[in-house]
Length: 364
Ligand code: GDD
Image (cartoon, rainbow, N blue to C red; front, side):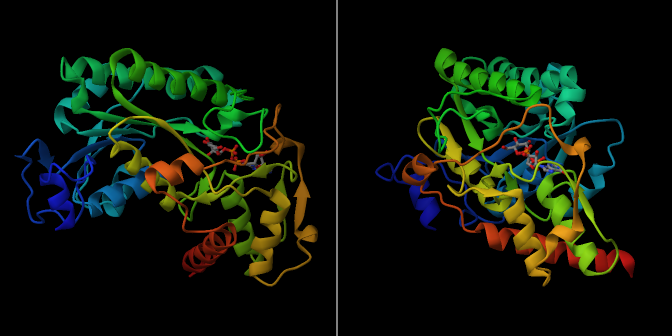
């Protein structure tokens, strides 16, 4: 009931909440004072790791959740429906502004979370044009669709943009914070910078409640196997079960600030509950090399001499590398009250355990 009191009490901090403590059982959207319950959210990129965690979080808070999903018969449709019972999927694509407008009309959202992107960095050198179209211009399409759809009442939709620590690229200061100069090192990073500044621009030009979360690497058992954490935890699981001998990797000296995706989606939600839209670095503040990742992952299954299971292959090296990412999440901690709950070791161990379970099930 605390949440409801906050919503009704004008003296309470002017923070918008639609928590699970609200009037449960209400399924029809209705006006509650100036605020609506249940709140409605549209998530683009709902099929990805973050989309699924965010969908779960919002459903648990009593939101009506809508997801934009691409393609004529997207095989991920069933998976999303299984993972997020109650979600409504709408066909559309952020490269097609008219489909985003249609999705807005169907969802009538209070909040839009733009998580859609071509997110695998190496892919962006091979498919730069497509990456720019989706990860860069796609964000302009969503912002512009919201602006047109909202008409004079632009305040009715709050917008979240998934910005990335990849924008820091050749880092100009350590640790990286909101004010650090951006120096992207891949077409993906460049596209994210465009999207980031478009978001800032819509906030400053039109007064839109548009926030950017500059998220450092965030992982989970739901991470795609092309990313280095999952590639390693999957291989470690298979090696420990005798199903494979070695794993082939690229640069082992790159450093990343890795957190748990489940923690990071909470920060996204918190950003949209603030009176003022803003940009926030979301990170753990700790950095680890790929070597350390290997040590923890192999160590968890009792293998200390991991080097004999790892080979290096130039195919996995990048034309330009981001060597050292470590974020300073002070602003998020002080303003949003956000901090990560899962540390590096727990994250890696959680992923190895999940992959062992997964491998056991598939080999049954
Ligand atoms: N993927 C991959 N595969 N990376 C490898 C490998 C390998 O075999 N070997 C070494 N690496 C190194 C890469 O060179 C990079 O320095 C680091 O591992 C992390 O690579 P990824 O896990 O692919 O993630 P990323 O940092 O490029 O990008 C991820 O994080 C960004 C946030 O900073 C993605 O999720 C991006 O979408 C996200 O914006």
